[in-house]
Image 1 (cartoon, rainbow, N blue to C red):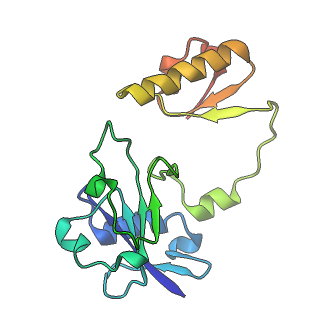
Image 2 (cartoon, rainbow, N blue to C red):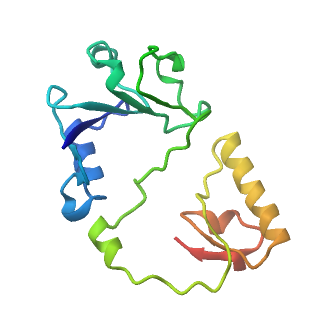
Length: 175
């Protein structure tokens, strides 16, 4: 069993972040296959840095065991270490190479989601998109979605706040 610890720079404690992420694992166990989340850096085989961590913690890490995920675009948050990571960093998940999938809007546990019946799909394509328009990137995403809906009006659109920003309200199906 490989042990991982989630580190962040937005102020959430390690145990709180682990508890939140554990909700997305079977039986809230914090385990997925041969991976187990832990809350002690000394116990961890790998360090998963979500956007950043404190300089004090960063100095203590073996970077050959660091997996980095950029969560926020550069227009929202300055890049951790200027994205100038040690050469031996195990994985550099910056937006140039990878797009992170956030879980904080998911208000159901893994077990609840697993029990849901698979819905019958009447449409060939759907979009799950946030209605945020705070950054230039947010606005571009909404603009693209509206243009796509203009071209393909049968698309179903889901997402928090999205109904308020669509030109075609019939496309919006809810959160």
